[in-house]
Image 1: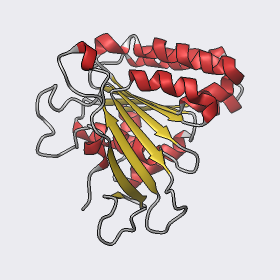
Image 2 (image 1 turned 120 degrees about the vertical axis):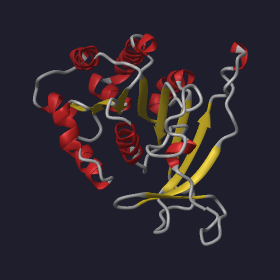
Image 3 (image 1 turned 180 degrees about the horizontal axis):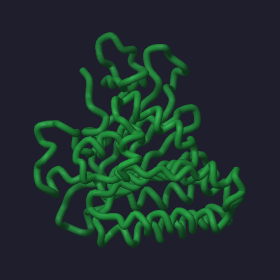
Image 4 (image 1 turned 90 degrees about the horizontal axis):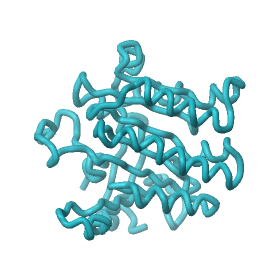
Length: 258
């Protein structure tokens, strides 16, 4: 039994029957947090979110800050997902800020790096059709250096999300959940409507599967005190292929109960 990863994460699927339902029933989550553990890479999920959002409407926009992988990595990933990234970049539908190129080119560093990102967001003029992706925040913290870097990233996220609220834009943040970033992860978890955890298989490497995906979605309720509660977690096993991602339910026939 295959489940679509994006629908499990609460994102409408481009071209699906429910794609054009009016909000809030089919509105994407305002803040999605992707937490990856060591040994797995969540870039495939970001590429799927990016291409799906742009395929849903010609009016949609994506602003991607690439600090973990470079811009060429995501351009190639979009091509594999049958999306012409070069055309989207040329039209302005997709903007990729190559943070690694800026740092290694000596153009910016430290606080100026976070200011660069803030300036690019302001230039984009985010609206309700804008998706902002940051890959990833822990890389930015490392570039800032030590504990002060973590504090700077927390301040940056607060400044990043503040102008997005009135614009109703959407934001996807990726972070590594290593222990040295525990405080940052806790801060981000409190902000996120949807948390997607990506981890390795407990039994070790496998040719059949790449890892485990667990989704925690905040409950939809009109009572503010209950807004922090999460729905029961949904867990899937996944395998990343060249042009698609297959998912399986743990214990499914033909898949080892890992």
